Length: 298
Image (cartoon, rainbow, N blue to C red; front, side, top):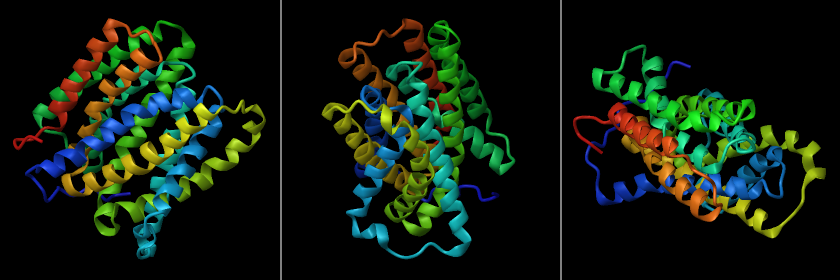
């Protein structure tokens, strides 16, 4: 894989661009709440294929999903996205939330632009500019501050935090791979096929856990919302934003995730949030902003 996301053609953010930019962060901020609600009734291994299936069915309602064909040269990269953008990271989060709270998971996801920028530099075989390096250092410090209070709860918590970090690394690669494909095929056709791959990969692993389901309608509708909104709407919008704005700028939408997940976790699920984690979240967001900002700010 040698293709690096090309520079965006759009440098000026219109009002519509700002609205579209905010959608993934706001929706994904609710995703960790929905995962936590879904885990009340469904095993972790079942959450991912369910959400991917509901996302796939949602996108199937749009005729654009079936437009055109993926060229043979790009099929491997589409399949790769199904693995690194969907199947693996989306499978890791439910297992992680068995060990850490939804609010902490959301706060750690605020560091996604840091991983995207790091991976972009790696793929381009080029060091980031000085400001980006400073931002990366600050961002990683913030991530450590977020994780420390939860890690103090024992090895199980560190295991969950480790799963989240692995998922973020996969996100970093995925966004950089997605840009040229989105620009070529469009976000809905691309994501519909990516989700089809992800469902085919994750569904077999869910079969052994079907007997562990304790069905409730509230948990079911939480997973429906997770799939229709978090897996369909947010991913399509993020793919479109990455193609229009560039991967680093588009990924900055996740600055909004910690705010939404923190509010839902604390106010709705009554999760305890340690002050050090909130400070770390703020530090990570500052670092992410410095790492992804340009002379022409978003």
